[in-house]
Each structure stands twice: as structure tokens, then as C-alpha cells.
Length: 289
Image (cartoon, helix red, strand yellow):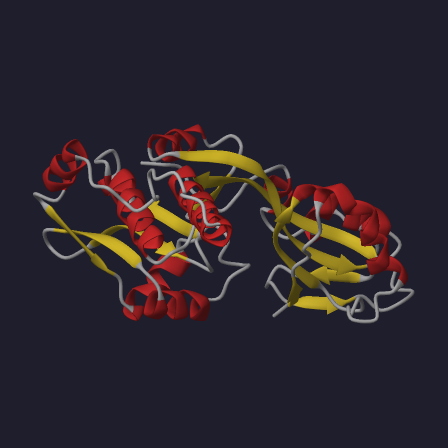
């Protein structure tokens, strides 16, 4: 397990991140630290200011796409609140709540003619986690908790096999959309994204997803649903100098004087499997179906 934290900092005030290097009494830098999805400029500055402490940094990059309907609803609610304070009349418009289009309803009915869409159960967590692209960064227990507490949908074939799925994460995040190879090219990804987006909006959240830059299939899918790119984000494991992760996934400190350790001494064999590829921009959202 990794210590974890998030950093909230306006992009216009990135210079204040120097405090993490100068007054870092609240951060334990002697062990690997897991940094959840954070604005890429913040991570870049963090690496710059704390380079004297860091060894190998494993990164996963992706773009944040946000549902415009959710943003419109938030803006309208704020406008209404301000109008009530001012005694003026707010301009009415789309409140961002999901509105089922007739063509979408017909398409969903057609897709579900030979399948069924329903809420997932904790018993599905292990199978979903085993195929999750970043399962080395998330535990199966996290999936179990999310499925118990939040909307998580699966498409089941006529014989009851789980064919595709998608889960709501913290706040309005939607992730882990996957379709088994035998069931791809049937539109299940769009069906799941549409249903989960509606469920997240109904719960009062702004839906958003993380998509790797080269994943044009997912970009096109979410664009159809009114999602727009906002910024690049990074998920990272910050390892202090002298720490490595073995092939079994276990973290270990390298004894001083052993001749191994430090960023400049890492060999390809010592880098966690897949880390080099992920650091070049692979995010957790899989290819669309």
C-alpha cells in the first residue's frame, strides 16, 4: 500500500508548491507516495521542486473530459442563487438533468433485445478488477466499495455472462469501462456511458472521465454525449531515492552501498512492467467498443 495525498493549487500559483520542498513536515518522503489524478502542471512542478528527494517516478497520463450538461446545471444553480440574493429574475434554461432522446431510447431498446443492463454487485468486483488496466494501482476492495455505494452498471448476455461494465468512482468520476472481446462492436460502451452519465447527473454530480490522448475511440464516444476536454492529469507513484519495486510488485529499499538504487542506476529490468509505456501517456480508460 502507498501513502496517498492530493494537491489543490491554482495553476496560476504553481510557485507556492515550493512549500512542499521547504516545509514538508506533513509528508513522509522516506517511502513511496501515490499521487492520485492531479493536474499535469502541478506534478511537473512537484518533480522539479522535489527532485533532490525523488528516484524513479511512475506516471499515468490522461485527459479530463467533463460533461457540459453538468457544468451548465452548476452555472444555472449559481445564477439562480445569486438572483435570489439580488432580488432579480434568473434566466431559465437547460438545468443539466438527463433528458432521454427518442432516438437514444430506441437505440438502447435495440441493443438490449438480446442482453440485459443492470446494477453490478460486489460479486462482480474481482472479475472487473482482474481486467482493469491499472489494477496494480487499485485494490479489489476499492471496486467492492464503489459497487456497493454508487451506480455501477453491467451488460449481461442472454446466458447471464457479464459482457461489459462501467463504474462511478469518487464524486462524478466514471471509469473502468470495458467490453469483453467477444461482445465488442455492439454499442455496449455507448449504452453504458449514456446510462451512467444520467445516473451521475441525477445524483447531483458533474460526470467526468479520464481518457488517454491517443484513444480516439473513447474521445469520439464521449463527445457524442456532450463531454469536452478540460486539462491533462497525471497519476503517479513517487519513489524516493533508493527504492525499487521488484517483479512481484513488492516495494523495497535498496541497502546503502549495494551499488543499486537512485534514478540514474535503474535498469530496464528493474522498472515495473508496463511503467515505461504508461509514463508516455497511457491512461486507465480502455479503448471504446
